[in-house]
Image (tube, rainbow, N blue to C red; front, side):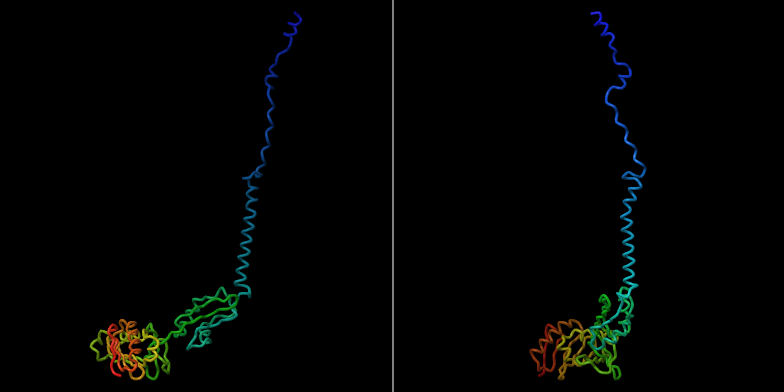
Amino acid sequence: MGGATTAQRGTPGPGPSARKGSGPPKPPKAPKPSRGSGPGGPGARLRRRGPLLASLVAAALLAAGGTWVLYGSSWLRVEKVTAAGTDVLTPEQVLTAAAVPLGSPMVGVDTEEIESRVRGRLSRIDSVDVVRAWPHGIGLKVTERKPVLLIKKDADFVEVDASGVRFDTVPKAPAGVPVLELNAKQSPSARRFDEERLLHEAVLVAGSLPEPIAKQTLQVKVGSYDSVVLLLAGGRTVAWGSGEQSEAKGRALTALLKAAPKAAHFDVSVPTAPAVSGS
């Protein structure tokens, strides 16, 4: 027993070094990434900027190429100019007035300037639409003014449109356009309604005439503001009154001409109560 006891006592216990080293060993620390190699570092930023810079360069090259095609190349240049819509004028007159430079870049054509030039040089033109017909054409679509009344001036005739614009002087009266006869000097209302105002009334009446009646009207006689008389073919006369309610008067006259085609005098000065006389 004594040996057993001695053996137990002699068994060494855990020393200080054994207590400190107990438990699993700690893993080694991971090495720090080198500067610039992480997802937010300069290297990553450069990698992300690469495609963006390439796209910007490509866009700049495309823009430069497009600009050259539009302005510098011979592919998109004016080679042909056409005009349409003329009646009294000729297409050649419109093209001369437009003066579109052949060989100039299509994209550089100033359509508003061409429109202004045509209208300024040709008073008969009411409107003009300039369009690009890619890749080489320019088209001019014009609308001419239509005379509704003529003013006698010496041996010529001044054409007046429905807006009262005196746009041309011609040596021969166009067919189907009445001539103004203004005789308002003795009218009591002459001081209040001058010739320009009376001309306005005459234009208002002439411009509102239905086409079949306008073709039969030879003269528009104005004695005063409310005394407008039409002289129709065949010696027939129409008491129109003033320029007020002209559309209603035109409809009333159309009905009267159908109902009494052989009548000599028609009165539509009150369109709701028209009258005829003579035969």
